[in-house]
Amino acid sequence: MNESIFRQKSLDRISSPEEIDNYIRVTRPSLWLALGVIILLLAALILWSVTARIEATMVVDGQTVTEQIAPVSFLIG
Image (tube, rainbow, N blue to C red; front, side):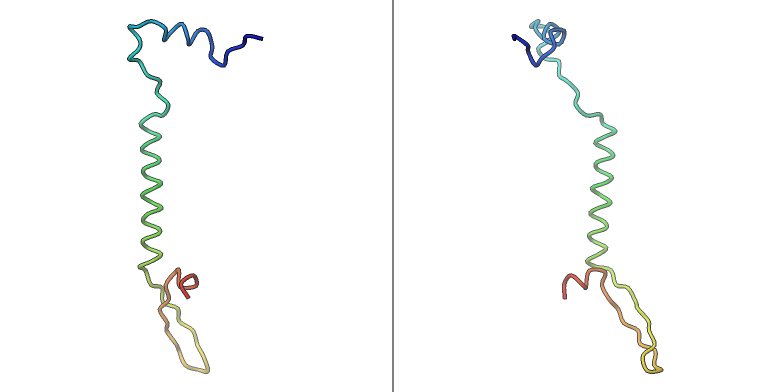
């Protein structure tokens, strides 16, 4: 049971000293760009949820009451 976790073809490819500088590209630049966009959108959403205000208008006992609430006010208290 002399099984290696590496394929022999891969080992042969990197075994020569001339190819020691070659690297395996794990991710493509497009994936990094997508990750950056997602992180930017999440940061914008968090910033909006902390700083934005939403107006809520309701009628109480015949009077119109307008109240400003924060999107995360239920978390803050």
